[in-house]
Image (cartoon, rainbow, N blue to C red; front, side, top):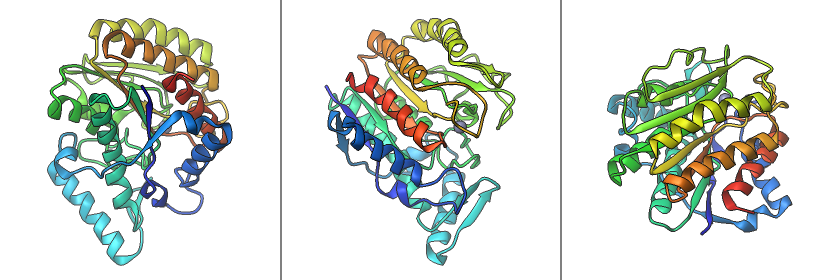
Length: 311
Ligand SMILES: [Zn+2]
């Protein structure tokens, strides 16, 4: 079975202004590299639907969804950008991008659970894992992975899903939404101290947070993943695995100081796939989060996708 690939064109139009690291060129770099390497032919390019309010409200407060949506609508109508927090700006096209980024994660979940694809990758932006139940944060509006995880649980009736977050920043939004939801196990590894600053003290027993100091290398990250993630994941026996796939722990990325390379992303993806193969019929939905060094981002996504697609 195939690897479904989602990258809705609307995600390209979200633009927070010149010099912002979370830029449209991130997707260009990924899509170009997939074509240049021929990896695109191994993927099943599919269309996504925008998320519905009902789907978003499984992870976010209804009032928050309404307020953010109103800001999107104002930005669109007025033709200018509106800041929601110091890092996170809505431009006129952001509403469509945010709704379809979350919707791609939901569409991918439906496709994988229907058996139309073995697994899926969503090359989407805005990213999601800093968005809490009721706040935008760190370039994120809607928590794409949390929305998809709750969709798998609440709409499809799964009983256990795992979330793997290897972005260099702690997925505080996902933790805020899913801490103490016993149907979810979240494992994360992130640089600490670093934005957003929290994560060292987990908010629930279902959170396996692994903070690592600046300048940690891939070998040490692999040891910690093996020792701290794997036993918990295998014990939990997830029926589906979601990935917050941020690639900003790459050694070329300037937003942090970890030392991962493409081979480390390949290794982590293989370990995640082992868990999915053992317990979840191979079902994985992975969504892009961070990754700001364009060439390193594209090469790392390709390494991740080669494992997912088995090529
Ligand atoms: Zn990040």
